[in-house]
Image 1 (cartoon, rainbow, N blue to C red):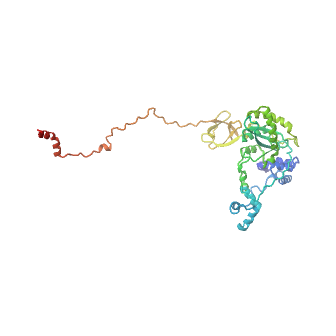
Image 2: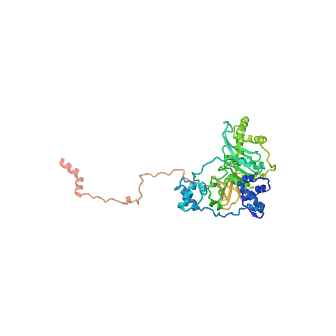
Image 3: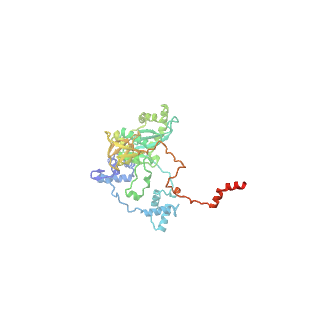
Length: 450
């Protein structure tokens, strides 16, 4: 992204608005660090750089260059191998001494701890201490940061199924921006909450959430330093992709206390909303969702506070068509030679606004969009198309005679060329004396009797 004569990455370009607020004095350094996910020292450095160089200070000077103190991968592999083998259960400091003594490898104990933590190897010397916490200041403007989460609870008190309530609350005003019930915590619930926010209030500058796999890929913490320096990135989740398309900065909370505003909201709703649902006689998921808009309006009149700066920080709301294109499940498919795509066991072809079949080049990239209402369509080169099921013709089965084949009799007459027919046994001749005797035997017997 270009800003003047300076080309910034998408991540750096998102810092421009917040840093401009910090430089103008409309936001404190601490608030800017919380919104950007940076340390206060880093924000102070960026603030000083922007005063001297302008927006160019946000571009990192060492982009793509490996630090001189980077530990080589072969040494990291040796450390992990020894920590799980020969030096198992040794503390990081003790292991540093052993590496220096026996392997001639000079690495600090802190570096060993960091390497083992990245590889998921437990360090017995690390002990958990109770952290001291302090409340942070609210954001100065509404829409600068919203907190999102979901709460499983018996909201209907046994009158219906156990539900998960998805919600979003503004950090500056404690205003409930959206609520939505779902049978479980899922992507559809968060999409619906985001849809309510961006269409009614506007696009927020930042979203604060926990580390659930819906928000962040489980592989995000498995990249090594070398992979990060090489520019390798973990694929975004569906929700992360939607936030990225909306230009929203996504901040991860590492503890429930960090997003305490929405955690306290659940405590309040679990006492107030449950009673209101009971009074209204609601016992189904659909009735509960229909009840929420009116409840949110009354709740905000009772509990919302005014922001320090009355000017909202929301980006303009988006249209319904744009929201449908972004806040949906997207899956990429390749077109076949027949201009069709396959999705979940079905074959589809693309139709334009005039219901004409779109001709696609082979292996063309098509994005299938599954919307919140369950309908599907396609996105190709920035244009949306309807999907029509296409039945692939199947080969006809071979026709079989209705009359079953008659079985030939077993005792059939052999053909003349049968070898057994041609084979004849030699004829046995009798002795002539024996033949004569048998022939005239009866006549001799009668003569003797006479």
